[in-house]
Length: 182
Image (cartoon, rainbow, N blue to C red; front, side, top):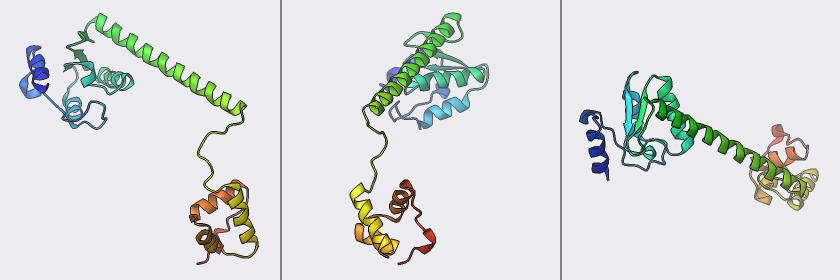
C-alpha cells in the first residue's frame, strides 16, 4: 500500500527526498512522519498527500491542519480527491467542508443539551455516582460522631481518605484534615 502511495506522489512531482511516511494508523494524533512533514514545509510550498485520510484523523482534525497550513502560507493538495487549495475551486470546496463540520458540531451540541435537559426533567442526574452510598455514609458519620478517627473509619469501611473527604464535603461537613490520626 505504501508503494502505491509513493508512486502516486512521485508521479505528481513530489521529490523523493521529501516523502514522509508513518507506520501507524491515520487515526492516531502522534504521527512522527506527519509532524516532520508539517515542520519541514516553508511558506509558499504545497503539502501533497495521496488521500485526505492520510492527513487527518477526522474532518475536524483535517480542517484544523489545513487551516494551520493556510495561516503559514502553505497550500494543500490531495491527489485522490483532486482537491487543491491553490485553485479557487479547491479552496471553495475546503471551506464547504469546514462549514459542514461546524454545522455537524452545532447539531451534536444541541442534541447533547436536549438529552441532558430531558434526563433532568425525568429526575436523572448526570455524572459519576457517589463512591459512598447514603447508607454507608450514614454509618461513617455515626462512627465519626461516636469518636472514631477518620483513619480508623477509612480502614473499617474500606474507603480511601480522599473519598471520605469528598463524601463529607458533598454533604457540607468538614473533614477536619488537621485531626487525621493513624
